Image (cartoon, rainbow, N blue to C red):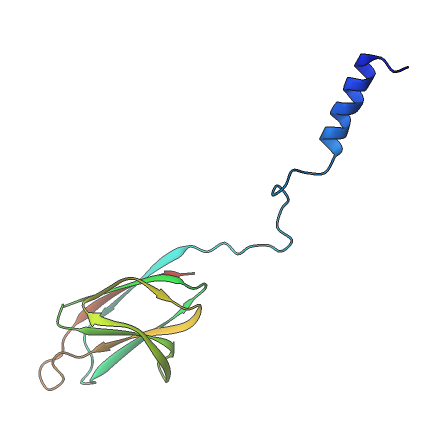
Length: 130
């Protein structure tokens, strides 16, 4: 017959080496580590163009924030690249806060508030997933 110490030792060993508890297993595929990054673009102006465009690659779908000064500049966030724009995600003057953008190529189009007059310098701050 087995002693109590032996039974306890065997039971402890079985629990330690037995199957892990539900949900404690590591995922079968690695998950990506993403972080938000902020890109700042300082421009002396539109150079006489009606619009300017800034492309970015959102590493995962999620919140994007865009801010531009001066407040007279209109922003349009779209899917795709500048030369092949896709659907509009959001549109507003001055600022877009925590707009859900898809993963992949996206861009922000800025409208020149004074296309016929003197150039308008601007600052664009873009926060997205990298």
